[in-house]
Length: 350
Image 1 (cartoon, rainbow, N blue to C red):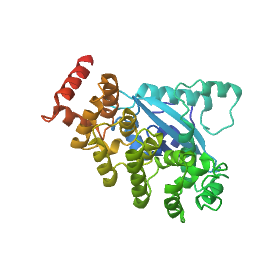
Image 2 (cartoon, rainbow, N blue to C red):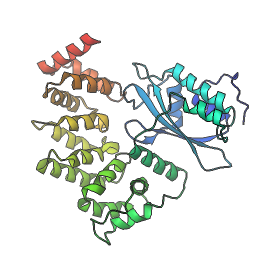
Image 3 (cartoon, rainbow, N blue to C red):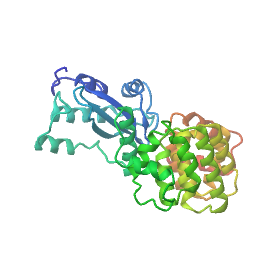
């Protein structure tokens, strides 16, 4: 471990973690919960790359770190501001590092005193994500560190076997669901879920969908979820279950089956605002096509809600994957007069 003092100038979080002798893993916890490769994050820290999945002008990052002598990780949950190009705000990142170094010095995993706790708790860059995100993050960390799942894992696996009936879900816990979904490619887990999905009551299906949104899984499960979504949309379009099922496709929204489904959805005469918000917030990868994104923008304008259009457009254009497609749409000769007018108003406000 290299000596770290407040006087020592540390350029990046990556450097801080390495100097402390810590092992660490990075996760994006903004739009979805997913691994953030270290080499990619180092380039983000040096402003060589924009942050890949910004949320409302911020990078939401989980850092799990531990010393070699201990496999029990510590966790930082950070919300760091980005500039208008999606590049990391260096001043904010440096301020966070300064607070950590002042409080903890070289040993990031030390037992903290009351004074150190106060200093750390006053850190303006720490935040608390939604509980379902924390559950998924906890499950992913345990899988990555080859640690056993929680005590709630086995009851959920048993429930999926349907030995006591689908309505007897009271012993199912959210952590057990996320532990199972994080291990979906292990053992017979995908087959168990595949058989169970059409039978799950809403009380179980909802947290299952929230867990699935953070995981890529076999295409057989993807196709069942698409089928359930399509059926629910047709029979009960206002049912919250429709949005939940759409969320379940999030991490696989780049898949051609999901893209085709989204294209069909957007061809409907009326698409709810809730569905449009879910598509941009979670399934943005399905919109990385000029024709599909143009259709999406046109649907967004059908409800004459310019505030919503402005908010979603700014959010989408901040995502590096979508940014060039969005600009191609607003320059397109095929855009409708309504879209041209909305874009004009958007830029006149800038």
